[in-house]
Length: 345
Image 1: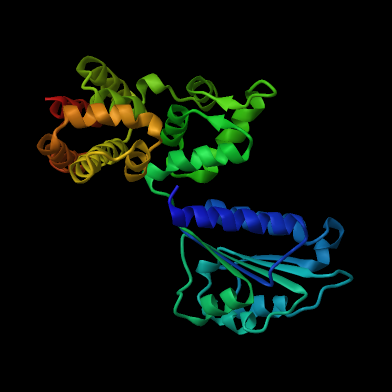
Image 2 (image 1 turned 90 degrees about the horizontal axis):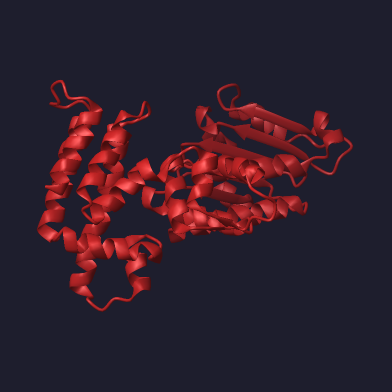
């Protein structure tokens, strides 16, 4: 997991633990492209800040499209009724036109009010007063979306925090199924744990296949593995199967293949600059679990530098075609099979 994202993860889990222990900040500014952590902290504060019997008078939840800054400030400046504190939550705050005016409250917040400002898919301007005053009065969480190649590592960490070990190939398969949607990964995990035998501590590929509904045998993850070792017959069969799926989208497949061959290109660069690099260094540079290094060792042999660069050029061409450019009557399924044949050629 990237360092910045790991820092966000630690911060959010710390804020959730504090909320469960009755410790709250005067102001929470939760923002960014990844909604998982925004929801995690917001939900923890809502669940623990106000007793259920006190919520009618001391909890206000509003939405940016429905209120202005003046209304939020007025609510935040009220004193709690027969309670230690009150909670004001502003969801979808990015929809509020005068959001910067909330800085007026954040510069001098009430000790008896907990204000949570949630911005989904948006960020407060770090140069302006709202961000600066929220940071000074409370805490700012900036949640950046994970890149495709970071998801498997996040999944492994997530499972470890739940007392589970997930096999590297199982994490990669789940990552393919869920993409970068961390909320979906959490939901799929919860569903799966309910179906696994009590006392299960290790999650395998077969567990993911049975409970998440994706088959490794006919996945893009398997396709990249077959391309790495140049197993042409199986690669063509898998490509045809993937392309025939009702959910198949050419741009997503090309993106996954591009990520794979870009890592092969980076591996070439590493081996040229540091031929004696240890496995830890290799895995770190590639952004993969060391478990997969044998696959990449085979890939750099099968795709020399010039060949690897030609494949990346091919992928750019098919990315354009997959988005509707110069394809004639070819279907997305036919395009994928054609692409895989040209990569292997």
